[in-house]
Image 1 (cartoon, rainbow, N blue to C red):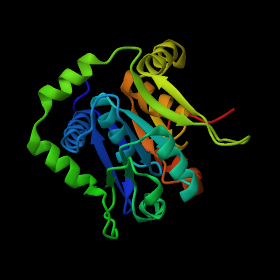
Image 2: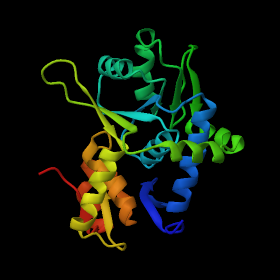
Image 3: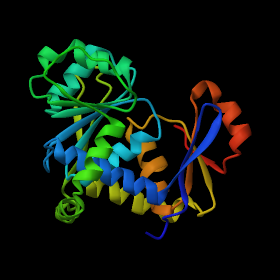
Length: 258
């Protein structure tokens, strides 16, 4: 509420800068959460996210958490075989993908994923006839908006506590199959609360975000900490354009691995 009209995220599409305010961010997340509930997502379920960084990523993350579910972020360069293992091992009921290339990885291994029930895609995709219920991201949000699940979302959020599972993030798996690291809402919140007093972020700071959201570091600093302080996050177009983005956006902050 306090941040409603402030810009939460800014990104470039077709050369033009676009803004998403904190108020619209929350409304989109609520509509998507209602759409996921309409698909049958229950508290405690897992939903995978297989996408490059884009504005919809943190909105989808928030939507899954608002359902009382846990998300399983997959690193976008993963092979179909790696996607199959992490989606199957986590017991994900559904997956959110960025577009055709990522959807193809899922379809290629669908026979080995009997628990997977639905696929949501940020960009339109063409899929062969299969058992998956499919939605576009816009379609999911429109259905959710019509369903109007505000009371149910509020109830599920109220039932979350510090011990509730928020996300399962898989290790890089250098010595065998990756391990699924279970992080709770308390794990994430305690990190943000510890960072706020030492990060010296001010509300008028601009953060340039470029590290992958599939890893916990950027997700904590560029999403959760940014919301905690109420700054504007600028999405880099990609690693190749980072110098151009620095020159154009002139951020006061960016995160990087040591």
